[in-house]
Image 1 (cartoon, rainbow, N blue to C red):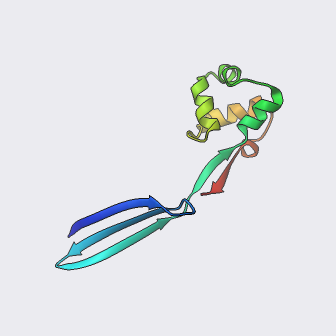
Image 2: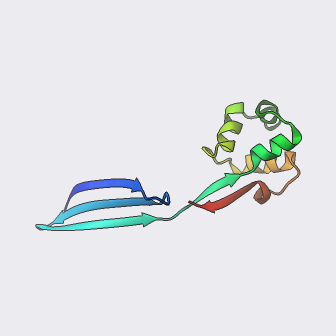
Image 3: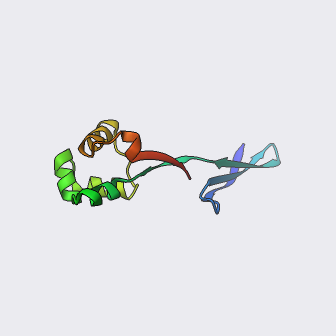
Amino acid sequence: MKITNYYSRRDKNERALCKACLTLNGFSFILSIEKNYKVMKNILPDLRAERKISQEDLAKQLNVSRQTINAIEREKYDPSLPLALKIAKVFNKKVEEIFFLEDK
C-alpha cells in the first residue's frame, strides 16, 4: 500500500476535511474523512469589562501570566480544570457559565 497524495483543509463551515489517495495492488482509492468538532468559547473578556479588571490584575489574582489570560480570551488556549475553577471563583460564577462548547 502506498499513499500517493494527502491533503487536509477546511470547508466553508470550518469543518476539517482530509483526503488521501491510496494505491493497493495497482488499484487506486480515494479516502475522504470529515470531522465535526466543538470548540471552547468563553465570556471572560465581558466579565473582566463588567468589573473593570485588567488582564494583568486578573493574572495576578490567578497566579498566571497576562499572556495566559490573553490566550484564553482569544480562545487560543483552553484553561486547565483547576484554572477554570479559579476563574469561576473570582467572578462568582459556575465554570459552565463562563466556558462552553460550540460547534465549529
